[in-house]
Amino acid sequence: MANDDATTRSKHSELDNTNDAPIVISSSGEDSHLLTGKKLSIAFAAMLLALLLTALDQTILSTALPRIASDFNAFSQQGWVAASFVLTQTTFILFFSQVLRLYPAKYVLIVSVVIFEIGSALCGAAQDVNILIGGRALSGVGAAGILTGILQVMAQATRLEDRPTLFSLFESVFAFASIIGPLIGGALTDHASWRWCFYINLPIGGVSIIAIVLLVDAPPPLGSEDYDRSFKAMFWSTAALDWIGTLLSLGAVTSLVLGLQWGGNEKAWNSADVIVCLVLAPVLTAVFIFWEHYMGDRAMVPLAIFKSFSIYSICFFAIFNRFIYLIFTYYIPIYYQAGRHHSATKSGVDLLPLMLSVVISIVVSGQLVGRYGRYWPYLVGGPVIGAVGSGLMYTVTALPSNAAVIGYQILVGICIGTTLQNILFAMQAEFDDTPKLISQATGMVNFCQFLGGTIGLAIAETTFSSELLRNLRKYAPDAPFETILQSPLSIYSAAVPDALVPNVVHAYVKSLSIVYIIGVPASVLSLIFALCISNINIKKKPETEIENHVPHGDNVASEGPQTSNEQHPMAEKIHSP
Image (cartoon, rainbow, N blue to C red; front, side):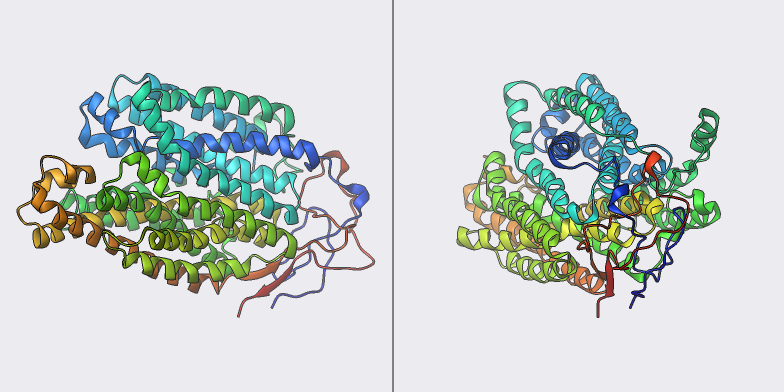
């Protein structure tokens, strides 16, 4: 149990990890950089517009990839069109979290949107698949900066107790993009050109940049008010960033993803390529950890972040949380296409129960956390509901009641919606008393989420491919395997005799059930880690208190220690049983 006695200190000191009460100051020093009212609404709308760019970019290509691969005659490389974006986004989330300790979040956000726009323009104009892949990788870099930049602005320009509502909108953008992305991608590909899937980002990004420039302030990064900000000092500080750590993390993540995607799918598990990748990944991870320890405070991931077991639990929870989300987002449409002969567009509509339940759960849980100050119950309750929903999805056959499948999707969606945003908020609450680490701590959660999603999809793809091949041999040995493995829609084409269709459908649905059941152990592990996360009450106490971690520019509180007649803690930390 954390100590409840507030200890006042000077304005530049950090609180001890056992002290729950941040420094409190009089409301007369209220920070000019806090966004409230109409300005907050407009500025946050501009940031959500930038976020929509990255969220759409992850879903809009799902219906356009076959046409892109056909135009470039590069079916063997189409996977890298999607993977290159995810790999660079995952890795550079940590890098931008480090950059945000030096530069104001506003400028990082603007530069990131520009990088994303350049990548989109390259993709739209690409005349070669390698240029397209390179453009996607560059867009992934920009997407990482956009995500971390927005989170930093939220941490710096909003009050802690106001963030649950903002986080609910933040995550709702991702869910909304998952709904409309495939529909927009299909419409543009069919009626215009797949290149417009990338060109559409340019005007949206331009509007977002203008709004951010006009509406968002640029205070110094959290905890850096006394840094030397001369050009020479900033140049050498930038040069001293953890560039080697970035390369090591990129190599480790790439090796892991390649090994998981190849193993049992494109290559045998005992092939030299798979073995090298799966051995190289932990080796590079170990080297990365030793390097980060050597770099100390200059590390991309300062080891000071991992100050308690609660932090480790948050990171592992984030991995399994995104793991569950992407498995069902990608593999429920396949059920409808293969099991019910729905088109790609209609299967997107069939996914609405999942996505709408995610959005509603995000909004409702965000409002409740903002009102009562507790997010821990949702982190514990969500995985329980998710385990039930995943188990019920395992029971789905080719022709169950559609109402039953909708109900199962809603259960999984509630699990995702009540946890997706709150785990990010949990990490920021942990570091409310150590502001200079907030950007990198939040970046670590984002890294774990995207890493979990990447690993989850790789595991699901390998599991599904191996199970489908096994079930086809068992239930439809005379079916054309190569054709069926390429697309679920081929089941209902002339390539598969009508007499074999029921058996092939059974093999597909049986294989999908194994993918869905992965959600049960993932939910159980999420629950175990949730029980180890600190239970923090973030409900603001007296109105005269404001958080000291938001930089005050010229209005920084006086040099002497601040006191309050009533030393109420801003956040009551209670470790869960």
